[in-house]
Amino acid sequence: MLKWALIFFVISLIAGGLGFTGISAAASGISRILFFIAIAIFLIFLVLALVAGEIVF
Image 1: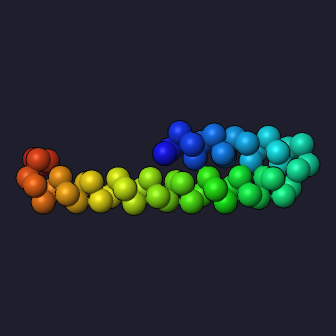
Image 2: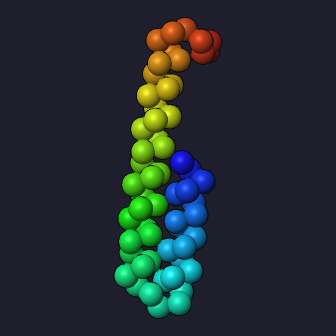
Image 3: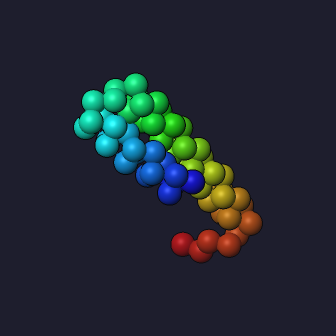
């Protein structure tokens, strides 16, 4: 998921540099959504691992 977020971020940068502001804004929005979904999934799995007792501090 982070891979796709990075790909859309790069597309956004390239499109913005070439003057395609609409495409740049859309790719930036998609990138932001994918990034926050990936963070949410990571946090869910982290909590599940802590509850299961797999992570020892």
